[in-house]
Image (cartoon, rainbow, N blue to C red):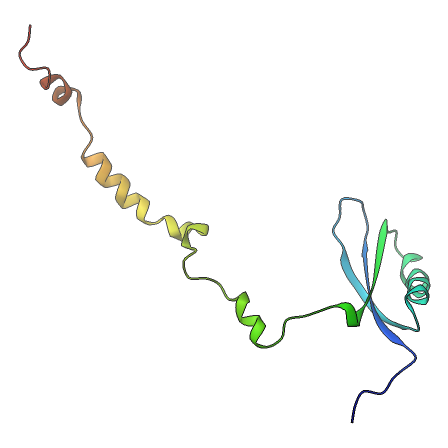
Length: 115
């Protein structure tokens, strides 16, 4: 049994309130075409809140990830440098460096007994 053809299509409505804001999903609606979807979105949403831009997207044009494709979203294990815990080795490395620092007496001793 296949999907029955319907007169209405599903549309997703996105809007942003200020020019610097990002788009946010507002709601879904059913409409026969994209022009009618825009009119319905204006009637249902734009008269309630001020917006500077609106997007109407047909749901069939939105592609999500399938089951196996979602595996690419897993974190990689070699990205410790992106987190502060990834720098834990620096304290030990700095301590080792400080222990090998040269003092003034040692540097002057390299000159020898030249007078």
